[in-house]
Length: 263
Image (tube, rainbow, N blue to C red):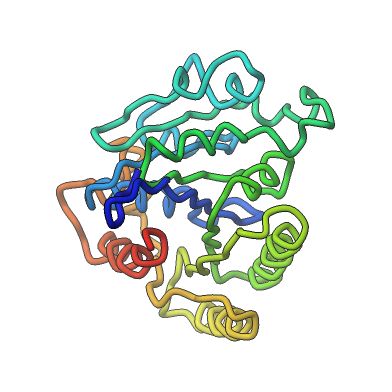
């Protein structure tokens, strides 16, 4: 969808991956999507988490046609995609995704999201929300993604989880998708006033440096403002009229990201 030197360029597929829930993954994804739209990009968000948190965060509580129907061959991607606002489209999720392992023949295990390649021509950026575990659908997401962002919440055992995810991505890159790139690690739900968070962030920085992986300077703070935006306004906090200092941290992160994802 992008134009560069007069050449038509397909959109980038960027996924947010972490092997546990409650780390601010969906908030990260939906707010980045909103900022990309404000930046003039045409964005598709694919909700591949059976909990459908990203769908709900964008105001889609229920959809008759979802990603599950597309994967099962009962609908086309374009039948399932809904426009939630000008510039931002959603391919919604449903609880049925959790049952894919029982519905799909083994020979299809790594071919569930092949349709994403065809959608790249229609969007500048495709963002994929992943389940909070490295299950069947996660492998398919890694296969079709160009880049991965890893959210890191500085909590006990958080560094171990970070190491595990990076090892999984590196193994997948070596064996399946050689073009896959970890674009960076971002600290989420951070309370910079606590000693524990500072220590764990330092451990994450040190590990990332040894692995030659970028750790973004911007830290997303812990605040009730992000879930409140979802609960009361059904939209990402970055789209609210009142923009606080904490909400604006996403703008700083987006500025760090834009040269990396639109290069």
